[in-house]
Amino acid sequence: MSNLNLTSYKNSNALNNMAVFEWDIENETLEYDEMLPHIMQRQLPKTKINDQLEIARLIHPKNRAEFQTHIDRLINSKFQREAEFQDFQLDFKLYTIGRCYIWIHLAYRVQIEENRAKFVTGFIQNIDENRQEHARMQVMVERDLMTGLFSKIYANYLVNQIVSEKIQGISHALLVLDMDNFKQVNDKLGHLIGDAVILDVALTLKRIFRNTDILGHIGGDEFMVLMKDEC
Image 1 (spheres, rainbow, N blue to C red):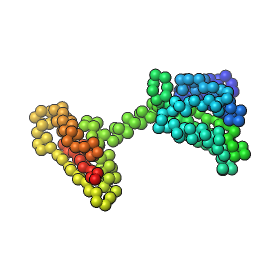
Image 2: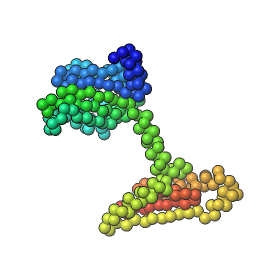
Image 3: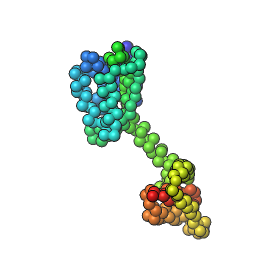
Image 4: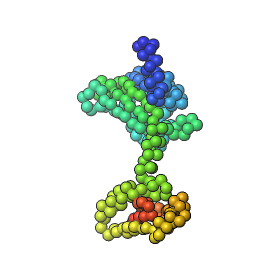
């Protein structure tokens, strides 16, 4: 690879928060580029790697078992399919110094010989920013920004999901609420005060109803509540 291509490759990896690696399972060696320690904020051993996969203890407890399953399969399992290569991927949360847990995407290709994994090549990528942005967007879709209650579309979705279950002996109560003379508040006191009234009503509904009930702001001065039967 020319120096120009090598520089472009490194710059691309840096811009994408991505690092590449190659794991020789039989010889227990690991090779990786300079971005990997930067992303993981630690150096990984390069020899006797099979006995030093302490990274598993740095995985979030909710992801640890799945991560360990991938490692155990590579080291100990036989691959039943007659294929030269197999591809896998996994998202998990990794503990990093000073930043708590961040989301990591792992994608790798396994070279198989005699039904055993011989080599693993792949990349890891810091996808924490993308995950956080996705979570923020998800909240914007699900929640009404003014009140924090469920949006009309998402409240309807939740109600339909619950009602469609049709469990024998279970019934729910659906309330649709609107405020009398709310237009006069906006006309006489202005929309800023009107918004404050809407927010106050939303907070009141949160205090009155249970955490398990579905509360939605369905537009203007209208709200909905699904009181779930949990008997």
